Image (cartoon, rainbow, N blue to C red; front, side, top):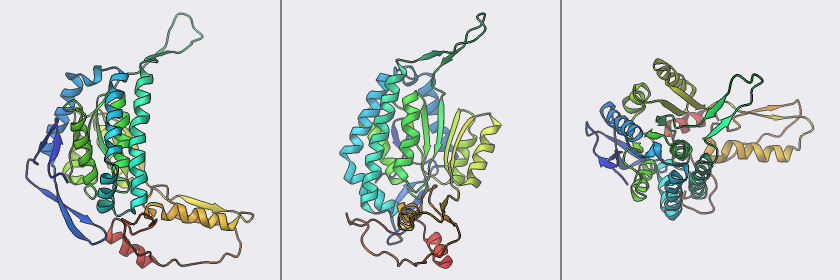
Length: 334
């Protein structure tokens, strides 16, 4: 497990020397001390990404050339599948089968965007037909610049891949700030980047709290785009920060997702999919079926007992969530 930040192709200690307690949600014991980056570390990472984009080779490579790196990352993720999945289990608390599927999806994500990067070479421009012959219109695809990404704790490495892979495929460089609750596999992606010889500064990983690392990233003037997944309240702050410099901002925010059951529904099937929707990944999903709207009808109500067992069990499909405080709140609601 890594104890340094990954900036400009090197592993460096945080400027202020701080650490984050990484807690195993099963035992509530501290299992690691992750580096706690602050505004100074973010500044170094952003400047490294800026230089890599403006003066380095990355943005000037063809899509096919960038795809080679993305496929190499996917291959290393697959080779490290068991290790990364078990690290995800320890860090996040999800059962091993789900963690293994997540890691498979991570590799698939990098391969998917490698294919799209290759396709960019065949369609760099698109001509838009106009009714007025005196004018012409073209769509030119080019990398945006430096991307600042902030990811959540429910799918630690998978959510990271959803932001890193498309940005790198497009020719952008990135500063990644993963959730301080689940930083371990994100840092391992830095190891993989190093192993595949990704050019320095293309991917920088700064772990830290939202206040100390996330906020400085959203406010940094050299960042061209912000990508955030998390709560509505924090997403609002990210958008406000991006507005100061008119940054491009993309948000994926959690909400309450209703499951609607009509009177003519197959109740057994409805219950099956409600269960899947709310208990998949322990309900820690932005699209979890956290509300059920039922057309007037007599329905049996059940209370489900807690599931006990080892998270490393290959057959275990459900387990406790990541936050002790939230678990207590949920138990109180029941």
